[in-house]
Amino acid sequence: MNKKWWLLAAMALPLYVAAQPALVLIEACNAVPDAAKRMECLKAAMGAAATPETDKRQVHVDVLKRAFGGMQAGLDIGTSYNNYQIAVLDLAKAVAAFRQDAGEFAAPAMAQLNVSLEAYRDAGVFWERSIGFYAQRDNSLAYAGGLPVGLNNMEWLVRKYGLPTVRSDVLGFHSGLHVQNTRATIWAYASARYSEALRALAPLPVQAAPAVVDPDAPVKTAAAEAAKAAGCTSEPFLAPTFNTPAMKEFAVRCTSGKVMLIKCESGVCKAPD
Image 1 (cartoon, rainbow, N blue to C red):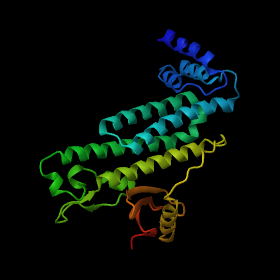
Image 2 (image 1 turned 180 degrees about the horizontal axis):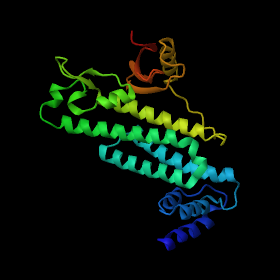
Image 3 (image 1 turned 90 degrees about the vertical axis):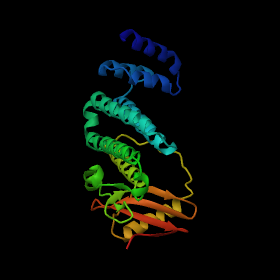
Image 4 (image 1 turned 120 degrees about the vertical axis):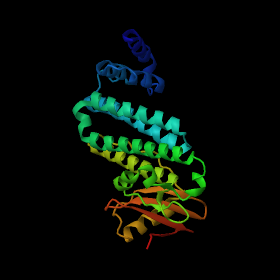
């Protein structure tokens, strides 16, 4: 193993020249189990052997961003439960490596990173329960409204994330959680905690992202204003749960910990009464 990673580092140096390091090589270095050797490999790959301390920290942050970016990309394009479990495991490895490699620099961000990782895991537990429950005969019809909370021991998830429940069965005997909306809400919460972790790493300069025109920007602004007007939170974080040309819906986590659903129709957004 030692010979392999030294070979990778040696191959990286001629390729660096003044260009961006190869993504494949970065990932190969990230797989080195020994922390000190992993860092040396990353330095070689990034051309950072003699760079200032801030640049070394940026190497750690870039690796972390790549891991969380990969998770979000998978969710954006759609992923299977099995692939999601693999992605969560990869994310856990990346967080552990960041904590070990970055040392004291990582400390201010670790609490939020751990909360984010835990939320992704909780969403996986909920997803697994929903798959198992609806695989049973007739459950898809009997509990079409949402996964029944009591029958699946999911009360803790409702309390932990302040999730809104729905009527699970036709007669209303069981409260439930809408499967897709619940996953989306928890994923949005995990993403928000990751963003908080990055902000905790200041004063590391944040590179401005290229401007992207969002056609839904006016609707999102209206939804945020509706959440503020309803006294939910002064800084709404919107998680889309429903999206059609005619109607859009966003989940907003309120200051109280509860989740509010903002519905928008023809550009007009309203909070629940």
